[in-house]
Amino acid sequence: LFLPPHPLRKRGGEGENQHHLSSSLLPSSYLPSEVVPMELAQVSAEAMHWFWFLPLPVVALVLGWLWVRPRRPPLPPGPPKLPIIGNMNLMDQLTHRGLAKLAERYGGILHLRLGLDHTVVVSSPDMARQVLQVHDNIFSNRPATAAIRYLTYDRSDMAFAHYGPFWRQMRKLCVMKLFSRKRAESWASVRDEVDDAVRAVAVTAPGTPVNLGELVFNLTKNITYRAAFGSSSHDGQDQFISILQEFSKLFGAFNIADFVPWLARWDLQGINGRLVKARAALDSFIDKIIDEHLSKPKVAADDPNADMVDEMLAFLSDSRAAAANATGAAPDELHASFKLTRDNIKAIIMDVMFGGTETVASAIEWAMAELMKSPEEMKRVQQELAAAVGLDRKVQEGDLEKLPFLKSCLKETLRLHPPIPLLLHETAEGCEVAGYWVPPRTRVMVNAWAIGRDRSAWKDADSFLPSRFADDEAAPDFKGGSFEFIPFGSGRRSCPGMQLGLHGLELAVAQLLHCFTWELPDGMKPTELDMSDVFGLTAPKAVRLAAVPTPRITCALV
Image (cartoon, rainbow, N blue to C red):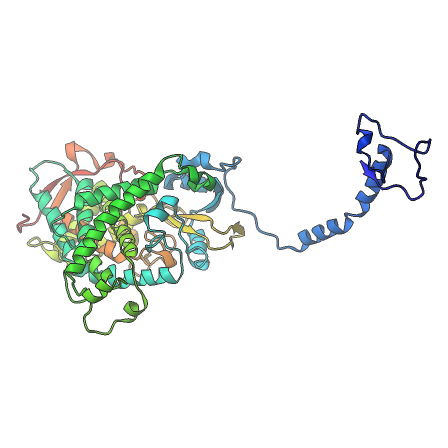
């Protein structure tokens, strides 16, 4: 270490006033001619002198900044985090049931860190109100994995699009044109497919159990396929279902790159190749259907046989579509201001198929299971059906409004078994909730399953009691304003297909209960019925429901 010569020190060459560092520390040839070496003790003393005085202004500035800056609230409580992976060691517990158990320990709002991502879990009605109503504008984004972003054409759909002008237009299109109750009631596909399901049950050999889980999945699959594409022959349906199954596997696949993004470039699990192949298969399938619709256009507003593709083609920015859908009438405001691409149409169709198949099928199966486990409640529903409809005909759409107890049973089913148990949101910016800090881009899971069983909100929360919904004015409804009951979500991101799904659910359950009496097979008692579930996009029964039907009405069923 060298410093400039001391101003009071005499310069010189050889002599006693010259001080030398040991040659073992630094060769003398390295000494600049204009620099005088100093002893280490003197260097240390002068360095310490400046150390104590020079940094004081800097230290004062730092302390002042720390004092005046806003003090951020703490993160919500949660289990201890490990370095790098955070709480990824708990991945097998991140189901609706596992998260409900964590909430019992940490409260209605808790924090997890999955890799580099913040995750907040909401499990109480009060916290759900904060997230879905008080701070709705901040919590209205959707999280998406790399697979979801790719398979939805970079969020070209409505389900995973971030909140903003594009999403608002997409939701308006879906609510007004695709998913309205009026539109659902005009579709022959719902009535026809429910009648086909009844016929399939009626031809079963007497005393033979029917796999109701498989029956209702095929029913909802056929309804949504016809609603989307208009094909009553189910041509190509098997191919499309295989594409859906691959999409479902990719949506749910664990990808380490979603939590540690810098690993994405190596594709350690081979997911990227599967994504490319799956989307290419969807492109080929739906492009063919779009071209067929363009060659035989329908005016969706006037044609009762028009399907969802026909509705969306009226918004396609393709010049051929504009010509195909020209009617001579002035376009409405939505047509004039909003245009779709083929990617939008494909992505919306995937929303419809995922949102309208497994979710509705699971709800129908759970409703039948709960009623078979509660024979007195089933008897009361069937008495209501006999009084409102009679035993000489099947249920029609107009009969559904005369069946209040059936509707109460379905509400109670959806309280215990919401179609999607974990509602996913993402914060657009940082936000304080209940005294805790939720960082920007935090994944938020609203545990609708746990909220529906909250003991502070529901008496005998785990019991099937349809009578709790008997008072229409006092009981919670499906609109999302009662945060102890949010089977379809609430606020901006509530399910736009709610009315369409409810129509199919009500008609299917009413028809199955009206046309047949049902008994458990092999002398099984109602208390022995397995009511466990499996976590996934929905939470379906772990064991498919099987029951023995007996015709109940006098009219022909086949």
